Length: 71
Image 1 (tube, one colour):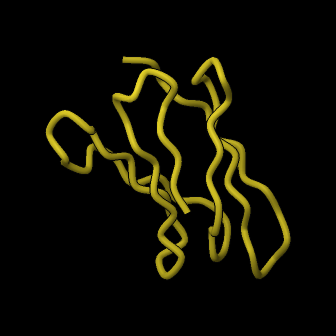
Image 2 (tube, one colour; image 1 turned 90 degrees about the vertical axis):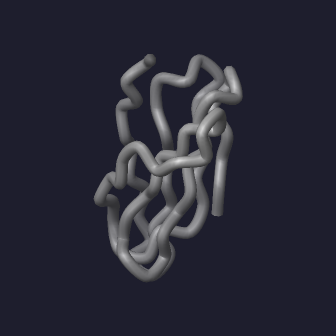
């Protein structure tokens, strides 16, 4: 249900009830962005280079790919 960026600066949390992923700044523990994804997101994985997030959408059986802006 969550993933951490390769550099540890951001956490990505799947919001199952709101069909979104929250991006959290780990230095300040604040939500910096909420990204809409597919229905009922369950798991989040970040690519090793930190350029993309893959989110599985449980009920509809799809994967949402999100490009990540590097800080």
